[in-house]
Amino acid sequence: MRSLIVTLTLVLALGGCSNMSATQQRTLSGGAIGAGSGALIGAIAGNAGLGAAAGAGAGLLGGYLYDQYDKEKQNSYRQGYEAGQQAP
Image (tube, rainbow, N blue to C red; front, side, top):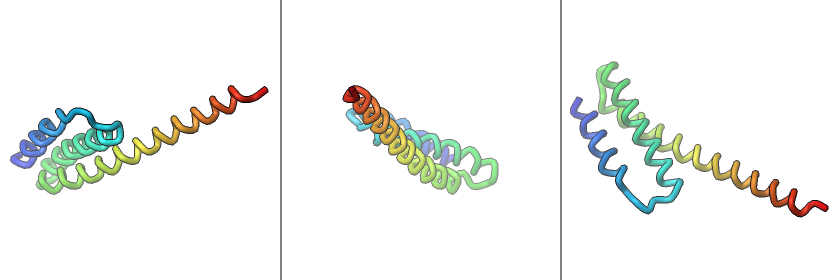
């Protein structure tokens, strides 16, 4: 329970950061969601601290990978749009 409180406190403290890029926001959000979920699952399994750490790591990675996917999707859309505008 203590790990869950610490994790949520950190999430709330870091969640107020301003002037973050989209990548930073998505990575932080993923880490926060992962930490909370991991702590909950870990508490059920008997080790909330380990669950929170594992969940945070997975969430950080997931948030970053989603951001990269979204950027690539936007880039592909923009290239297709521009190619369509240049076609005779």
